[in-house]
Image 1 (cartoon, rainbow, N blue to C red):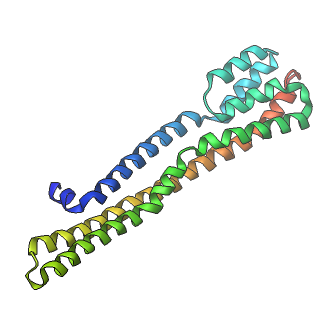
Image 2: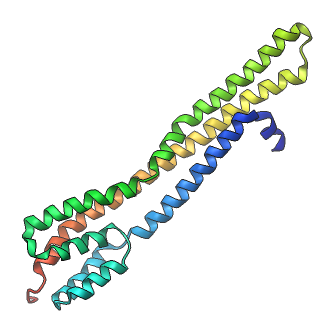
Image 3: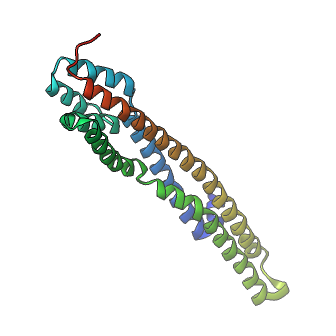
Length: 206
């Protein structure tokens, strides 16, 4: 392993640094999505029961104590409960627009790394071949075998490292995007139910 790291040259260390950044971003985003994704239907049922007792303060406290965009949308709906269905819908749409960017935060880092990792590997490959041909040009047929092999090693290692970073980064990016889409879809479903919950609050049960 030490021999491979040494053979890869300076570009390999940049690829390794980028891989460390990608891992950190992926782990942070996975943990964040795990915290904010809740069972929205169960949460809304609890809020509905509280609102039917006309306990608005407790409903707001439940929203504050629950993480995630769904809980914040419910809070917006409760605070705008006197606005009617159209007013609620407008308030929820505006609130939803502010919730999406934090979910997508840092995903561009993974996308960028996935795109430039092969280019970084290609640059390392090019530098390795430049090293080889420089030795050949300077020393002609008496070129040092070890130096030639070192240049070829650098080329192969950098190419492999760049691809080995780009492939999982691209897969991780698509996975996180699917998680964001899932959360956004849950927000849209919950928003429709939230309007019914708030407008039905205070009505006697059938």
